[in-house]
Length: 389
Image (cartoon, rainbow, N blue to C red; front, side):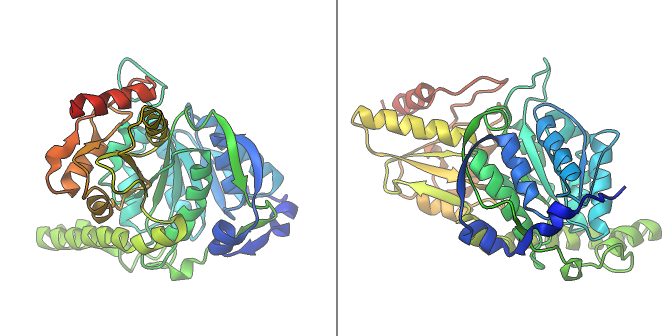
Protein backbone atom coordinates (compact mmCIF):
# COMPACT_ATOMS: atom_id res chain seq x y z
CA UNK A 1 0.00 0.00 0.00
CA UNK A 2 1.33 3.41 -0.92
CA UNK A 3 2.25 5.83 1.85
CA UNK A 4 -0.41 8.42 2.64
CA UNK A 5 1.87 10.41 4.97
CA UNK A 6 3.37 12.64 2.28
CA UNK A 7 3.58 15.98 4.10
CA UNK A 8 7.33 15.75 4.71
CA UNK A 9 8.06 14.35 1.25
CA UNK A 10 6.11 17.06 -0.57
CA UNK A 11 7.70 19.76 1.59
CA UNK A 12 11.16 18.82 0.33
CA UNK A 13 12.40 21.02 -2.51
CA UNK A 14 13.49 19.10 -5.64
CA UNK A 15 17.03 20.02 -6.73
CA UNK A 16 19.53 18.84 -9.29
CA UNK A 17 22.20 16.31 -8.41
CA UNK A 18 24.78 19.08 -8.92
CA UNK A 19 23.13 21.21 -6.25
CA UNK A 20 22.71 18.26 -3.89
CA UNK A 21 26.28 17.02 -4.21
CA UNK A 22 28.27 20.14 -5.06
CA UNK A 23 26.49 23.34 -4.06
CA UNK A 24 24.23 22.78 -1.06
CA UNK A 25 25.60 23.90 2.30
CA UNK A 26 26.51 21.01 4.59
CA UNK A 27 26.48 20.58 8.35
CA UNK A 28 28.39 18.20 10.64
CA UNK A 29 26.67 15.12 11.98
CA UNK A 30 28.05 12.20 13.98
CA UNK A 31 26.39 9.07 12.62
CA UNK A 32 27.00 5.46 11.62
CA UNK A 33 27.38 4.23 8.07
CA UNK A 34 23.91 2.66 8.27
CA UNK A 35 22.48 6.02 9.27
CA UNK A 36 24.38 7.66 6.41
CA UNK A 37 22.64 5.25 4.01
CA UNK A 38 19.26 6.30 5.39
CA UNK A 39 20.22 9.97 5.13
CA UNK A 40 21.01 9.44 1.45
CA UNK A 41 17.71 7.67 0.84
CA UNK A 42 15.89 10.50 2.65
CA UNK A 43 17.19 12.91 -0.01
CA UNK A 44 16.97 10.59 -3.01
CA UNK A 45 13.26 11.04 -3.79
CA UNK A 46 12.75 7.26 -3.81
CA UNK A 47 9.43 5.87 -5.03
CA UNK A 48 9.84 2.41 -3.51
CA UNK A 49 12.17 0.50 -1.21
CA UNK A 50 11.97 -3.24 -0.51
CA UNK A 51 13.77 -4.92 2.37
CA UNK A 52 14.85 -8.25 3.76
CA UNK A 53 17.01 -8.38 6.90
CA UNK A 54 20.53 -9.76 6.96
CA UNK A 55 23.47 -8.70 9.13
CA UNK A 56 25.06 -6.13 8.86
CA UNK A 57 22.60 -4.59 6.39
CA UNK A 58 19.47 -4.88 8.54
CA UNK A 59 19.74 -1.57 10.37
CA UNK A 60 19.96 0.47 7.17
CA UNK A 61 16.73 -0.99 5.81
CA UNK A 62 15.01 -0.68 9.21
CA UNK A 63 15.88 3.01 9.10
CA UNK A 64 14.62 3.16 5.51
CA UNK A 65 11.33 1.75 6.80
CA UNK A 66 11.21 4.59 9.32
CA UNK A 67 11.63 7.02 6.41
CA UNK A 68 8.58 5.43 4.77
CA UNK A 69 6.58 5.90 7.98
CA UNK A 70 7.67 9.55 8.05
CA UNK A 71 6.58 10.12 4.45
CA UNK A 72 9.93 10.31 2.67
CA UNK A 73 9.34 7.19 0.52
CA UNK A 74 6.32 6.35 -1.60
CA UNK A 75 6.12 2.63 -0.79
CA UNK A 76 8.00 0.07 1.30
CA UNK A 77 7.62 -3.55 2.40
CA UNK A 78 9.58 -6.58 3.54
CA UNK A 79 9.82 -9.32 0.92
CA UNK A 80 10.05 -13.09 1.46
CA UNK A 81 13.81 -13.43 0.90
CA UNK A 82 16.71 -11.74 -0.85
CA UNK A 83 15.87 -13.12 -4.28
CA UNK A 84 12.28 -11.91 -3.88
CA UNK A 85 13.57 -8.46 -2.96
CA UNK A 86 15.72 -8.16 -6.07
CA UNK A 87 13.00 -9.53 -8.35
CA UNK A 88 10.42 -7.12 -6.94
CA UNK A 89 12.81 -4.17 -7.10
CA UNK A 90 13.39 -5.10 -10.75
CA UNK A 91 9.65 -5.00 -11.39
CA UNK A 92 9.25 -1.65 -9.64
CA UNK A 93 12.07 -0.21 -11.73
CA UNK A 94 10.60 -1.61 -14.93
CA UNK A 95 7.42 0.19 -13.98
CA UNK A 96 9.26 3.51 -14.08
CA UNK A 97 10.00 4.05 -10.39
CA UNK A 98 13.17 5.16 -8.62
CA UNK A 99 13.97 2.32 -6.25
CA UNK A 100 16.38 1.37 -3.47
CA UNK A 101 17.38 -1.75 -1.58
CA UNK A 102 20.35 -3.23 0.26
CA UNK A 103 21.86 -6.61 1.06
CA UNK A 104 24.93 -8.36 2.48
CA UNK A 105 27.09 -11.45 1.96
CA UNK A 106 24.92 -14.58 1.67
CA UNK A 107 22.00 -12.34 0.71
CA UNK A 108 24.02 -11.11 -2.25
CA UNK A 109 24.68 -14.68 -3.33
CA UNK A 110 21.07 -15.75 -2.93
CA UNK A 111 19.97 -12.87 -5.14
CA UNK A 112 22.80 -13.24 -7.66
CA UNK A 113 20.62 -14.21 -10.63
CA UNK A 114 18.86 -10.84 -10.60
CA UNK A 115 21.89 -8.58 -10.87
CA UNK A 116 22.73 -9.37 -14.52
CA UNK A 117 18.98 -9.23 -15.22
CA UNK A 118 18.95 -5.65 -13.90
CA UNK A 119 21.89 -4.78 -16.12
CA UNK A 120 20.56 -6.61 -19.16
CA UNK A 121 17.25 -4.77 -18.95
CA UNK A 122 19.07 -1.44 -18.35
CA UNK A 123 17.43 -0.55 -15.04
CA UNK A 124 18.95 2.34 -13.00
CA UNK A 125 18.55 0.57 -9.66
CA UNK A 126 20.77 1.64 -6.74
CA UNK A 127 21.59 -1.12 -4.26
CA UNK A 128 23.75 -0.74 -1.15
CA UNK A 129 25.95 -3.72 -0.27
CA UNK A 130 27.37 -4.13 3.24
CA UNK A 131 30.13 -6.63 2.57
CA UNK A 132 30.64 -9.61 4.90
CA UNK A 133 31.96 -13.14 4.84
CA UNK A 134 30.11 -15.84 2.92
CA UNK A 135 32.25 -18.94 3.52
CA UNK A 136 32.18 -21.81 5.98
CA UNK A 137 32.69 -21.66 8.89
CA UNK A 138 29.98 -18.97 8.91
CA UNK A 139 31.10 -15.39 9.43
CA UNK A 140 29.18 -12.14 9.61
CA UNK A 141 32.43 -10.19 9.79
CA UNK A 142 33.76 -7.74 7.18
CA UNK A 143 35.10 -9.24 3.97
CA UNK A 144 34.82 -8.14 0.33
CA UNK A 145 34.75 -11.49 -1.47
CA UNK A 146 31.17 -10.92 -2.67
CA UNK A 147 32.44 -8.02 -4.79
CA UNK A 148 34.51 -10.49 -6.80
CA UNK A 149 31.37 -12.43 -7.70
CA UNK A 150 29.68 -9.29 -9.09
CA UNK A 151 32.47 -7.96 -11.29
CA UNK A 152 31.04 -9.28 -14.54
CA UNK A 153 27.31 -8.85 -13.96
CA UNK A 154 27.17 -5.57 -15.90
CA UNK A 155 26.57 -3.56 -12.74
CA UNK A 156 28.45 -0.33 -12.07
CA UNK A 157 30.32 -0.77 -8.77
CA UNK A 158 31.53 1.87 -6.30
CA UNK A 159 33.45 1.09 -3.09
CA UNK A 160 33.05 3.51 -0.17
CA UNK A 161 35.92 4.12 2.22
CA UNK A 162 33.75 5.54 4.99
CA UNK A 163 30.27 6.79 5.88
CA UNK A 164 30.80 10.06 4.01
CA UNK A 165 31.55 8.15 0.83
CA UNK A 166 28.54 5.91 1.43
CA UNK A 167 26.22 8.90 1.62
CA UNK A 168 27.72 10.67 -1.39
CA UNK A 169 28.12 7.60 -3.59
CA UNK A 170 24.47 6.53 -3.18
CA UNK A 171 23.18 9.92 -4.31
CA UNK A 172 25.79 10.09 -7.07
CA UNK A 173 24.71 6.57 -8.02
CA UNK A 174 21.24 7.79 -8.95
CA UNK A 175 22.63 10.73 -10.92
CA UNK A 176 24.96 8.44 -12.87
CA UNK A 177 22.64 5.45 -13.31
CA UNK A 178 19.82 7.58 -14.69
CA UNK A 179 21.86 9.21 -17.45
CA UNK A 180 20.13 8.18 -20.71
CA UNK A 181 23.35 6.84 -22.23
CA UNK A 182 24.15 4.84 -19.08
CA UNK A 183 20.96 3.47 -17.52
CA UNK A 184 22.59 0.64 -15.61
CA UNK A 185 22.25 -0.53 -11.99
CA UNK A 186 24.73 0.85 -9.48
CA UNK A 187 26.02 -1.15 -6.53
CA UNK A 188 27.47 0.97 -3.73
CA UNK A 189 29.66 -1.20 -1.48
CA UNK A 190 31.03 -0.66 2.01
CA UNK A 191 32.86 -2.98 4.36
CA UNK A 192 30.35 -4.25 6.90
CA UNK A 193 30.69 -3.19 10.56
CA UNK A 194 33.88 -1.18 9.85
CA UNK A 195 31.62 1.35 8.11
CA UNK A 196 28.03 0.37 8.89
CA UNK A 197 28.32 0.26 12.69
CA UNK A 198 31.01 2.90 13.30
CA UNK A 199 30.14 6.51 14.10
CA UNK A 200 32.07 9.28 12.40
CA UNK A 201 31.63 12.82 11.21
CA UNK A 202 29.55 13.03 8.03
CA UNK A 203 28.79 16.31 6.29
CA UNK A 204 25.14 16.36 5.19
CA UNK A 205 23.18 18.81 3.03
CA UNK A 206 19.80 20.00 4.40
CA UNK A 207 17.09 17.35 4.66
CA UNK A 208 14.49 19.71 3.18
CA UNK A 209 15.87 19.10 -0.33
CA UNK A 210 15.64 16.00 -2.51
CA UNK A 211 16.77 14.93 -5.95
CA UNK A 212 14.60 15.86 -8.89
CA UNK A 213 12.03 13.22 -9.77
CA UNK A 214 13.19 10.35 -11.97
CA UNK A 215 11.80 10.65 -15.50
CA UNK A 216 11.55 7.19 -17.12
CA UNK A 217 10.80 8.69 -20.53
CA UNK A 218 14.58 9.14 -20.90
CA UNK A 219 15.15 5.40 -20.40
CA UNK A 220 16.40 3.20 -23.29
CA UNK A 221 13.00 1.48 -23.19
CA UNK A 222 9.63 2.80 -21.99
CA UNK A 223 8.34 1.30 -18.73
CA UNK A 224 7.03 -2.25 -19.18
CA UNK A 225 7.34 -2.08 -22.94
CA UNK A 226 7.77 -5.63 -24.21
CA UNK A 227 8.20 -4.67 -27.86
CA UNK A 228 11.55 -2.89 -27.80
CA UNK A 229 15.09 -3.82 -26.79
CA UNK A 230 16.20 -5.13 -24.42
CA UNK A 231 12.96 -6.85 -23.43
CA UNK A 232 12.07 -8.10 -26.88
CA UNK A 233 15.66 -9.14 -27.44
CA UNK A 234 15.51 -11.20 -24.27
CA UNK A 235 12.11 -12.65 -25.08
CA UNK A 236 12.06 -13.39 -28.81
CA UNK A 237 15.21 -15.50 -29.33
CA UNK A 238 14.14 -17.83 -26.55
CA UNK A 239 10.67 -18.18 -28.03
CA UNK A 240 11.98 -18.61 -31.58
CA UNK A 241 14.54 -21.20 -30.46
CA UNK A 242 16.93 -20.04 -33.16
CA UNK A 243 20.53 -20.46 -32.11
CA UNK A 244 21.77 -17.90 -34.63
CA UNK A 245 19.28 -15.24 -33.57
CA UNK A 246 19.78 -16.02 -29.90
CA UNK A 247 23.58 -15.80 -30.09
CA UNK A 248 23.52 -12.59 -32.11
CA UNK A 249 20.97 -10.93 -29.88
CA UNK A 250 22.70 -11.89 -26.67
CA UNK A 251 26.18 -10.94 -27.87
CA UNK A 252 25.12 -7.55 -29.20
CA UNK A 253 23.29 -6.66 -26.01
CA UNK A 254 26.16 -7.77 -23.78
CA UNK A 255 28.37 -5.42 -25.78
CA UNK A 256 25.88 -2.58 -25.31
CA UNK A 257 25.80 -3.12 -21.52
CA UNK A 258 29.60 -2.94 -21.40
CA UNK A 259 29.57 0.15 -23.62
CA UNK A 260 27.03 1.82 -21.33
CA UNK A 261 29.37 1.29 -18.37
CA UNK A 262 32.18 2.92 -20.33
CA UNK A 263 29.92 5.87 -21.08
CA UNK A 264 29.45 6.30 -17.33
CA UNK A 265 33.08 7.38 -16.88
CA UNK A 266 32.52 11.06 -17.61
CA UNK A 267 29.58 11.16 -15.21
CA UNK A 268 31.62 9.46 -12.46
CA UNK A 269 34.29 12.08 -13.01
CA UNK A 270 31.69 14.84 -12.73
CA UNK A 271 29.68 13.65 -9.72
CA UNK A 272 32.38 11.79 -7.77
CA UNK A 273 35.54 13.70 -8.64
CA UNK A 274 37.07 10.86 -10.60
CA UNK A 275 37.33 7.08 -10.51
CA UNK A 276 40.41 7.31 -8.26
CA UNK A 277 42.13 9.72 -5.89
CA UNK A 278 45.92 9.93 -5.82
CA UNK A 279 48.26 11.10 -3.06
CA UNK A 280 51.99 11.61 -3.72
CA UNK A 281 51.88 10.57 -7.41
CA UNK A 282 55.68 10.63 -7.79
CA UNK A 283 56.25 8.06 -5.04
CA UNK A 284 58.49 5.04 -5.56
CA UNK A 285 56.07 2.83 -3.60
CA UNK A 286 52.37 3.07 -4.40
CA UNK A 287 49.56 1.54 -2.31
CA UNK A 288 46.39 0.79 -4.27
CA UNK A 289 43.32 0.14 -2.14
CA UNK A 290 39.54 0.44 -1.99
CA UNK A 291 37.07 0.56 0.89
CA UNK A 292 38.38 0.66 4.45
CA UNK A 293 41.74 -0.68 3.29
CA UNK A 294 42.24 2.92 2.12
CA UNK A 295 41.88 4.22 5.68
CA UNK A 296 44.37 1.67 6.98
CA UNK A 297 46.75 2.60 4.18
CA UNK A 298 46.54 6.26 5.21
CA UNK A 299 47.54 5.23 8.75
CA UNK A 300 50.45 3.21 7.37
CA UNK A 301 51.69 6.18 5.33
CA UNK A 302 51.49 8.48 8.36
CA UNK A 303 53.46 5.99 10.46
CA UNK A 304 56.14 5.62 7.79
CA UNK A 305 56.51 9.39 7.55
CA UNK A 306 57.22 9.38 11.27
CA UNK A 307 60.06 6.97 10.48
CA UNK A 308 61.37 9.29 7.78
CA UNK A 309 59.99 7.21 4.89
CA UNK A 310 58.37 9.72 2.54
CA UNK A 311 58.30 7.98 -0.83
CA UNK A 312 55.00 6.08 -0.38
CA UNK A 313 51.88 7.17 -2.24
CA UNK A 314 48.24 6.09 -2.26
CA UNK A 315 45.69 5.39 -4.98
CA UNK A 316 42.13 5.22 -3.66
CA UNK A 317 39.92 3.25 -6.06
CA UNK A 318 36.37 4.57 -5.92
CA UNK A 319 34.98 2.91 -9.05
CA UNK A 320 35.55 -0.82 -9.48
CA UNK A 321 33.27 -1.03 -12.52
CA UNK A 322 34.10 0.64 -14.77
CA UNK A 323 37.65 -0.02 -13.66
CA UNK A 324 40.16 2.88 -13.86
CA UNK A 325 42.78 1.14 -16.00
CA UNK A 326 44.26 4.23 -17.63
CA UNK A 327 44.17 6.24 -14.43
CA UNK A 328 46.02 3.53 -12.49
CA UNK A 329 48.53 3.00 -15.29
CA UNK A 330 49.34 6.72 -15.26
CA UNK A 331 49.42 7.00 -11.46
CA UNK A 332 51.83 4.05 -11.08
CA UNK A 333 54.20 5.07 -13.90
CA UNK A 334 57.00 6.04 -11.48
CA UNK A 335 56.47 3.30 -8.90
CA UNK A 336 58.87 0.39 -8.56
CA UNK A 337 56.68 -1.39 -5.98
CA UNK A 338 52.87 -1.59 -5.81
CA UNK A 339 51.12 -2.88 -2.68
CA UNK A 340 47.43 -3.88 -2.82
CA UNK A 341 45.95 -4.50 0.66
CA UNK A 342 42.59 -6.29 0.58
CA UNK A 343 39.92 -7.69 2.89
CA UNK A 344 39.46 -10.97 1.00
CA UNK A 345 41.37 -14.18 0.33
CA UNK A 346 41.28 -14.14 -3.47
CA UNK A 347 42.87 -10.78 -4.18
CA UNK A 348 40.39 -9.61 -6.82
CA UNK A 349 41.63 -6.00 -6.74
CA UNK A 350 45.22 -7.13 -7.15
CA UNK A 351 44.21 -9.13 -10.23
CA UNK A 352 42.45 -6.11 -11.70
CA UNK A 353 45.51 -3.95 -11.12
CA UNK A 354 47.85 -6.52 -12.67
CA UNK A 355 45.65 -6.70 -15.75
CA UNK A 356 45.74 -2.92 -16.14
CA UNK A 357 49.44 -2.05 -16.08
CA UNK A 358 52.71 -2.89 -17.80
CA UNK A 359 55.43 -4.62 -15.80
CA UNK A 360 52.95 -6.08 -13.37
CA UNK A 361 55.68 -7.92 -11.51
CA UNK A 362 55.83 -4.70 -9.50
CA UNK A 363 52.53 -5.73 -7.84
CA UNK A 364 53.03 -7.52 -4.50
CA UNK A 365 50.48 -10.25 -3.63
CA UNK A 366 48.98 -8.62 -0.56
CA UNK A 367 48.64 -8.09 2.28
CA UNK A 368 45.24 -9.79 2.51
CA UNK A 369 43.17 -10.40 5.61
CA UNK A 370 39.87 -12.25 5.68
CA UNK A 371 37.39 -14.05 7.88
CA UNK A 372 36.69 -10.81 9.73
CA UNK A 373 40.29 -10.08 10.73
CA UNK A 374 41.36 -6.46 11.02
CA UNK A 375 44.22 -4.91 9.08
CA UNK A 376 46.51 -2.96 11.41
CA UNK A 377 48.71 -0.47 9.61
CA UNK A 378 51.74 -2.50 10.75
CA UNK A 379 50.74 -5.26 8.32
CA UNK A 380 50.90 -2.87 5.37
CA UNK A 381 54.16 -1.37 6.58
CA UNK A 382 55.64 -4.83 7.01
CA UNK A 383 54.68 -5.79 3.48
CA UNK A 384 56.40 -2.72 2.06
CA UNK A 385 59.56 -3.28 4.06
CA UNK A 386 59.66 -6.95 3.12
CA UNK A 387 59.77 -6.17 -0.59
CA UNK A 388 62.19 -3.27 -0.26
CA UNK A 389 64.89 -5.29 1.53
